[in-house]
Length: 140
Ligand code: SF4
Ligand code: SF4
Image 1 (cartoon, rainbow, N blue to C red):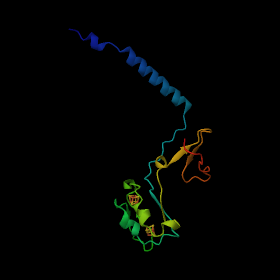
Image 2 (image 1 turned 120 degrees about the vertical axis):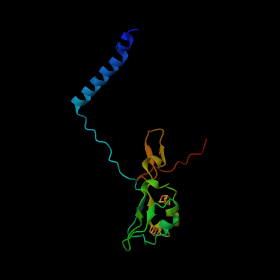
Image 3 (image 1 turned 45 degrees about the vertical axis):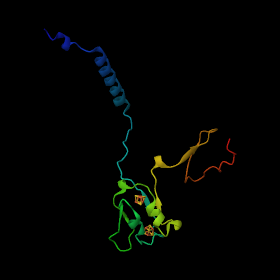
Image 4 (image 1 turned 90 degrees about the vertical axis):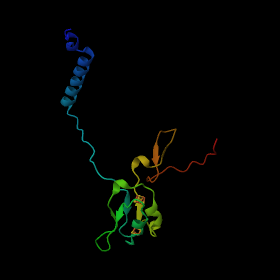
């Protein structure tokens, strides 16, 4: 049996390839200014140099051993394994100077609570500069 069947061209595949090539051509001509995001590690915690007393209690509290003591005397704890942070908050809770802002969890944007105002479509996030006043309407 001849293999003429297997040699046949596939019109659907051909048309897909043509259209892909045409799209690529269009993109090349437009020279889109696309820049990929930089690959950067997380920064799960932000320390405040002024209020942190470098007591290292947060290091002891972390269940994931994300932090290590700074070998430099009186240095802030080092975030050694940022990608392993659970954002559990143990470090914050154990910090005696948390209220003064010595340590703050820097939640990834996608994990931050946000809400949307139905009427205007505006989005709000916790921690933004001018949050709307709280909703005082009685629940339906
Ligand atoms: S949030 Fe939890 S896992 Fe992340 S550094 Fe603090 S204690 Fe460790
Ligand atoms: S962040 Fe708080 S617990 Fe950690 S070293 Fe500074 S003062 Fe101590």
